[in-house]
Image (cartoon, rainbow, N blue to C red; front, side, top):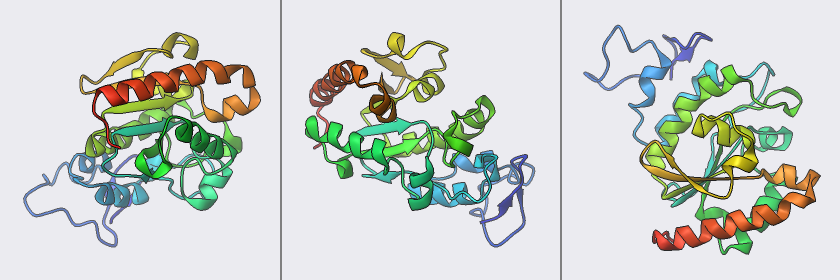
Length: 225
């Protein structure tokens, strides 16, 4: 795949070769132009690996693309990778990930049944919240990821994920506990991030209410398994 510049332009490199006839010469140097040309998660991941627009201002991070069932009926979206996620290249593998696994198990899901990703695909410094410009640059890649998977339901965990996806500047308490229409194609439920539950155990009860609602709706929609 070709190298990208911070402006989003692709430059001649080691090999992103567009299929003949698919790309206009005036457009094919823009990394964002390639996103909708990716028809599989593998193609999108290769594009993300060379997309410098996805980088944060922390040097030396690796891509944390996403993990799970590519045909999942449930997609879980968090905020950004942490240190352990950056180390392993997989989302939700630290303490918050262990809690997420327990939550999934409590509503009869296995981790491998769902697909897990984040708003950002690279770790920000000191695990800070993603900056608005980072979220804006990363979102088109995530939206394509969602459209390739085509889940029946999306669970946004954490305020940043919910605000970014719903394009609403609301508190999580006002967004959780209800399903939202997402782009006219999906249903989205917001709840607390597992990392927040580790810091604030009082939020475990409303989270439990949310995920029970999620499981009920999943069954109504005929989600598998």
